[in-house]
Length: 488
Figure 1 (cartoon, one colour):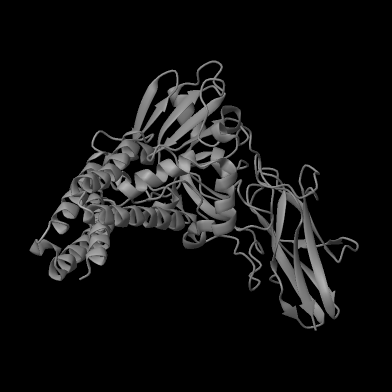
Figure 2: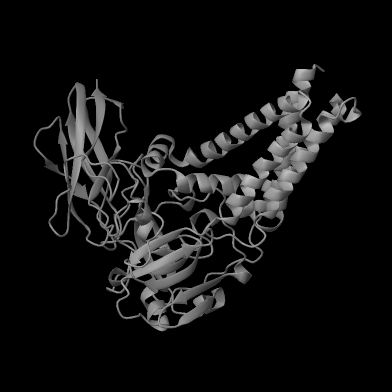
């Protein structure tokens, strides 16, 4: 094995061994303390808002795997260079460099918003394992630097990484059994789901429901140990047993992300089960002057919801169920907030563990601290699902269909036009409440050629969707969605 190749390989293996030790330790007791996760979380927090928006817009739900892959690639590249440094006789400085990468992870772990006392352990262990591995593999005339040793260490590192990931993904120790709601959702009216091929289903399956958050690893709180602390005029603490003893409501509610571009996929409708938030806040007592409900998730993320919105009679809830089942881990198990009418960053905190009645003047939540709007009512929006963009169609009757939403106001009407011509009223489907999206259809007599279809909605307050294209930052996108099709 050539000296340069061996030196580079030693550096790479030291990084893999470090990752293996760190991942195994993190998976064993706290997945959020993984060195890659804490460094990635710090990178996310320090990244300017325009860059984050670019990542979400460009990579969608793949933004987190791409970030993790980039971090690992940078780590391996630095480790390779340190291995080459060790080959020049500077083994101790090279090993110190590898250890330093782990120490940086420990610093990141210690400064995370929801850090625990032992969160630095995986990164410090990674530092020790990486440094010792590099020293062993670059020792002059040592059999440890042979091919067999390289293979054994590489296999052990990969096994440790896989084992750590497996431990991190293990299911919660206890299963949540949902009771029947004291106040069930009303049956869906006939025709709420038009069942047009290609049209978004009225109820979005949990596996297809959008996910936009800052968590690189999905928190998996232990159900038996989960508590919700609520700070009002007094502090109360609720276990899941306490939540289940309260009267649960069940409602169909559409959620939308403020990052959603015009026509984007970050919107979905589900049937939620939970405790009215207003009941919980009254129990804790609402301090005079409190205008913000500051919610905190298990990973330290925070969201700020207007207190007057929570208390105005809408079906704001601490949700524990989604579409008849306990919340999936990706969507907030064991509990999350659902507040109809507001974008998710101020209304839908997942993995919630803490609620605090406070003032906007005193405390700022994660995204508002980064320039997003404090008040975030969902804007009236519509989308064409059928036909798909660039679809080739046959001339004649063509069914155009999509969804529109204006949560807590409701969609009163939808219009479609072709090539900038006159607007035509679409036929809206029935809905159970103004808190859900609404399907619609329109029959188009298509003629040969290339055509642009546009859609706009009007809410129940009489406000028609804005035509001007505005990006999501700072309070949600506006504009009419359009698709271009070819008719033959």
